[in-house]
Image (cartoon, rainbow, N blue to C red; front, side, top):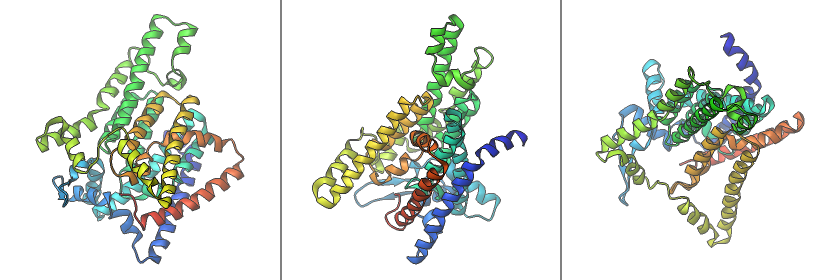
Amino acid sequence: MTDLAAPLRRAAPALLGYAAVRTLGLVVLAVWSAARGKSAYTLLTARWDALWYTRVADLGYGYEVRLPNGDVHSNLAFFPLLPWLERALHAVSPLSYADGGFVVSLLASLAAAWGIFAVAEHVYGRRAGVCAVLLWAVLPVGIVQSMAYSESLFTALAAWSLYAVLTGRWLTAGALALLAGLTRPVGLAVVAAVWVAGLVSFASSSTASTAVTPSAATAVPSFVRDRSAAPAPGARGWRCALGMLIAPLGAAGYVLWVGHRTGKGPLGYLDVQAGWRNGFDGGAAFARFVGEKFTSFPSALAGVGLIVGVGLVLWLYVVGVRQGQPLPLLVYTGVVTALALCASSYFGSKPRLLMPAFPLLFPLALALARTRTSRSAWVVGGVAVASAVYGAFWLNGSGPP
């Protein structure tokens, strides 16, 4: 408990600020929904993907919906960790599956906030860590962090896996990457970060053992040199290798199981996604979607907004590279961003799919950390109010598909 108390005290300002922002979002949602005669709790736990997860928890896999156009929406598209947790909570408590999903999301969102703080503090310091958490909390789609969706759970696992990589805890990193791979398809991003970090670590250890010179030491990436991010050769090397070995087992295991269940082999999961008209086309479909916005004046404004938004995401990534973000963060963020922007369907979900790419916020967190506390508090407070209002409006309208 003593070992946990000190890190928790360091993270307390970030966690309290996060809880305050998300509480504001839930209060505004409750008031807005009541005014429209809707249940805020139903919007959080029993619509869109949340329904699919609870069906998996209740009935298992095999449920599908056949649409008039021939598409088949199968619940095999949804990875199993969240439904497993919903089922476990239902088994040991009076909570329904939907209640369990809500509890998991609330707890996971706090764990994610703590993980984001840990990563940002490790790289940039405590003040930047607090700012990074607050920025993640006030994202326009931040209300999803409180929904019975898998984004919060995945972000928590990803953040702590990345922190374990940065601090040389390879077995922990691999185990958390395995769980992330059981949560969402984008778990591959966590696996990629673990593997790249491990390979660089082994390469740097080999270089150090053959020729330790000032130039060779300088060539080692900072995330390997600093704060024990690389295992020492020999005794700790096996931990790195084992962490790398177990990291992909979650995602690979589920994908192979889906292929076996559908009888379509290793690529069976891609067929399941195709039934949802979802795939990876390099962003061609998204580009056409944006282009179609310019066919009329009102929608052209939305097209401009989409272009600006994508440009901002790419600019933040480039700034992160220039600021020397650790390689595992860059790999993870790059894969999450590529998968989100280059998916061929569900264009309205792209902001939600980008939410786990929290290192994109680090350049903004650094800038915010350099301002006076009073000014940064006003900025975060104003954006938090806007985010809460937008989240209530969004969830009472089209919402996240």
